[in-house]
Image (tube, rainbow, N blue to C red; front, side):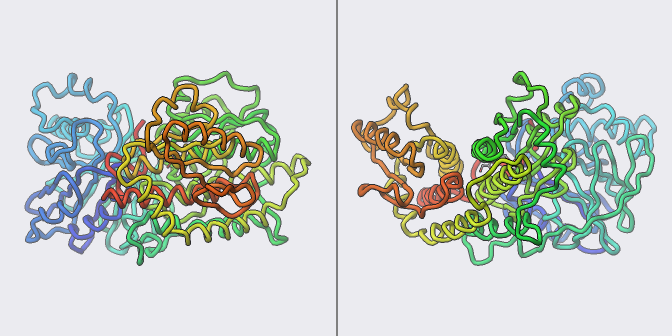
Length: 600
Ligand code: F6R
C-alpha cells in the first residue's frame, strides 16, 4: 500500500527518491510522484501508472538536494494524475505526501476550508491546506503542522516540504509506518527500510503521534506538544541483495524456491544448543495460562492461522478460534475467561489486525505477534513477538511467509505441548527437515506445474479447489493465490460442502483441483472428485505418496500428516504462478492489490 520516501543531503534527490520508490513498488500502487525543492521553488512530478512512467516524466535539468516521493494506492478518489501525491497548498508553498486515511476530512473541509478550492478528490489535500491556513493565520510552520495533526482523526504518515525552507523535511506519523534513516551529511525518510538501504542501514523508529524535523545533519523527534524525544537508531538487518531478484524472472518464483531454506533457517532460529526447540518461556507460559487462543489475521495469514489451529489443538490441546481481522472488531465473539490473542501478519502492518490488537490491549489481554518484520507495528505493540525469519517477501502474493507462519505455529504448538507435559509422538525437528527436503523436490517439479497450468487453466474462467480436513485450508490458499495473480475466479471448498450448492457451478470442463494428503479422509475426497467428474469437471488430483491412485495427476512426497500444508501448497503456488504467466499477468504486482494493507 502507499509508500513514502524523502531525502535531504548533498546528492541529487530525484534519483534517490525514484530508486526508493522502485523499492516500494512491491507494496502495490496505482500512481506515483515526487517533489523536489531546488531553492528556487518546488517542482512536482507525478503520473498515474508505474514508476517507469514517472521517471520518463521527470525533468532531469532540475537539480535539487531535498525532496519527497510517494506511491499511491487509491482510497479517496480514483487513481489519476490529479489524485496522485504530492499535493500542494493553495499558494503552492507547502507540498505533502501522505499514507493512511484522514477519517474526518469532510468535517475539516467544512470547518476550515470552505473558501479554499481543492485540486483533488483526496483526503490528503485537506492536511496541506490546513497547514497553510494556520501559517497564514500567523503560526510558525512547525506549530501549524502540530495544530493540523491534532485536528486529524485517522491514520497518517506524512512528509511535508516548505518552499521557503529548502533545508527541512517535516515528518509525522500516527498508525501508518514511517522510519527516518540516518546518514553522514544526509538523512532520509521511508515507509520501510528497504526503500533506503541504497544509502543507509541506520534507522530511527517513530511512534504514533510523533513528528520529526529532518535536516541534512539532524533528525529531531518531537511529540505533538513540541517536546524533544531522544531515540537511538537501530541497524536494519537487511542486505541489499535480499531484495534483488537475482536471476529469477519474478520475485514470486524466487520466494517459492526459498521456502526449503526458510524452513531450515527457522529450525535453527528456534533450536537451543542441545538441538531442542525453544521459545521464550514467557510466551509459552502466557499460552499455558490462557484457556482459549484467538488467532487474528487476514488473507494468506488467516489461512496459515487455520492450519495453526489444528497444530495447536492437536499438539498443545488448547482450544483455538481463528478470526478474520476485519470482522473481529465489529463482531467480537463472546470471549473465554482467559483469552490470549495471536496476530499472524507477514508485514506486521495490516491495519485490520492492528485495530483488533488496539481493542484487545484496551481489554488487557495478552498478545503475541507472529511476523516477518521485526519492529513492525504489530510486533511493537504486542506483548510478545515470534519472527518468521523468511527474509523480505517482495511479491505481492505471499508464499514463503505462509509456509514460515505454519512452521512457526508448529514449533509454538510443539514447545507449548512439552511445557504442558503433553506427549507429542513425533520429532518435529526431524519432520520439518523432511518437509524442507520435500519442498525442494516440489520446487524442482516446475515443468510439470507449468504443464498443469497450461492444460487446466490457460483459458478457463473459473476453477475449484477441493479438499477435506487440513487440505481444505490449503485449498483456500491455493484458490487465493490463483485468483490474485491470474484473475481466474477460483474457490476453495471443503469437499463435502460442494454438493450443498456450489456443485451447481460445475460445467463441462470446469477444472477442479483436489488435494488428497490425509489418510482419514482420502476415500471421502475421492468420492467428492467422482461427484464433480459425473457433472463434467476436469479433475486434477494432487495426492500424497502412500495414498495415490492411478488417475492422480501429481503425487507429492510423504511427510507427517500434520505438516502436509507446508508442502501441498507448493504445487498450488507454482500452478498459480504459471497460470498467471500464461495469461500475461503481472505476477509480482497484480492489479488492485497492495502488499502491506495499512488502511482498514
Ligand atoms: C495474499 C496476501 C494477502 C495477505 C494479507 C495479510 O497473497 O499476501 O492476503 O496475506 O493482506 O497481510 P499480512 O500477512 O501482512 O498481515
